[in-house]
Amino acid sequence: MKRLCAWQFGLALIMPLVLAGCRTIDHHPPMQPVLVVPPQSNVPRELAKVMMPRYVVEPPDILIIDAIRSIPKSPYLLRATDVLNIRVRNAIPDAPIDGQYALDLRGYVDFGAPYGALELGGLTVEQANDAVQKLMLKTLVDPVTSVSLASFGGTQQISGQHIVGPDGTVTLGTFGSVVVAGLTLDQVREAVERHLSQFLDSPEVSVNVFAYNSKVYYIVTQGGGLGDNVVRVPVTGNETVLDAISQVNGLQSVSSKRIWIARPVPGCEENIVLPVDWCAVTGRGAAATNYQILPGDRVFIAEDEVVALDNHLAKWISPVERVFGVTLLGTSTARQIKFFNQAGGAGGGFGF
Image (cartoon, rainbow, N blue to C red; front, side):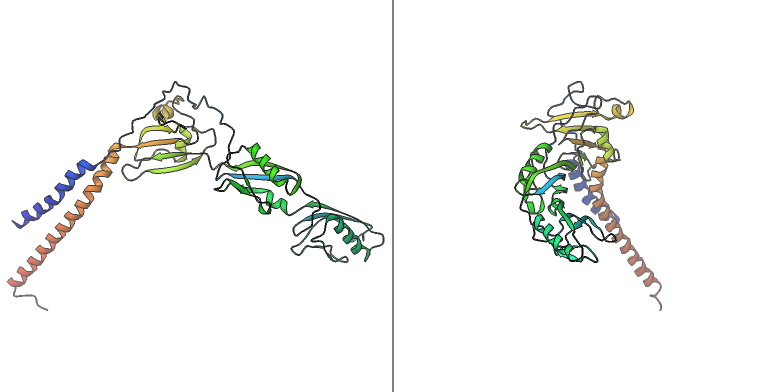
């Protein structure tokens, strides 16, 4: 009678869970496409790709800006990290002065022995030439000096990698920020040159994209009832569905072969859904549904319904198994205690 009560208790616990589970298990059936574009329509695919429109810069793209011409407006006062072309005729043969010399952090240029160092920071190029001439006269006879600006420290702030910030601007160090979001590369170059013209004489720069971070597509893999996985991949302009799946190392064990592209349409409530015949694309080399990926696409990989059902059942059965385990453990413990008590009473107790 006691055994029957224990099993009845366990059955009473499992039945509500099983009944509730049958109503709550969701197989995540494939969503019904709002608008399906058949393969024969004019949709870019593997053998009929289209060129992407002119690239528009947006956050968080990374740009490479190189200063081709960066001459500061006159009068320019020399400062640390500026580089001068300095040439001195009639210098000591064993200690020539003919090359580029950078101003250190104190604004000094060191010519070495026997000439010494000279402070040029805060002077114009013409004043620097006069200062070098006076210094050389202390050591040389009839020196002829020539000083010109090779590069100035601001060039290092212009050239290099620049990330487009959340406000759509790139920062050019002490030259301030320039709004570049929403512009093509040619427009970015013009905007940067126009901004730098406040500080430089007819500046020229080149602009390119180092990292295309703003134009992406998404690979969504259903996890068979254990959560979905989303991978964000930058668009290079040439990838297809097959390329996209290769980015996640193929289909997972919980995935089915039901794949489609969900493509947002600006200003339209009905988005485009492009079903993919995965077996035809991979096994038969068919290009009809191997669509070209465009920015904003969602490549959706549906789950295997059997695996999903198994995982959902496991979620409900696992708690029941734990309850049964505790019940059986309690029953077994009670039997052992009862057995030892009976054995102790029959034997006159345990001896120590």
